[in-house]
Image (cartoon, rainbow, N blue to C red; front, side, top):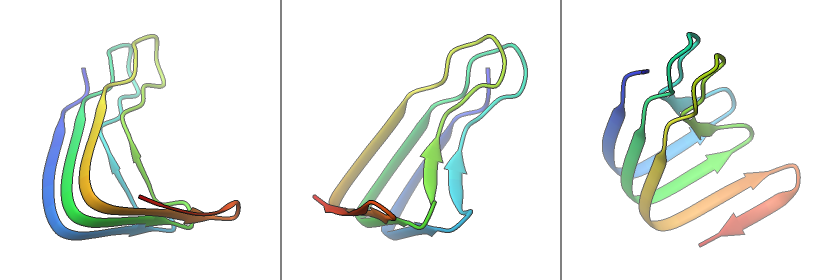
Length: 79
């Protein structure tokens, strides 16, 4: 299994090729990702992932934020 990632931020901004990831390339499962932030913005390809490229399953992702903005070519979503 891939390693897990847990992180807390006041303000989190991920853009371009930036990412928070708990991925694995082997046969095991992807790790888990838990992110907490007061505000978070993912834009222009920035991502949070828990993938596997092997036979295992991807890990879980939990995101707890007060204000979330996701923007890209298709538009902008705010929560």
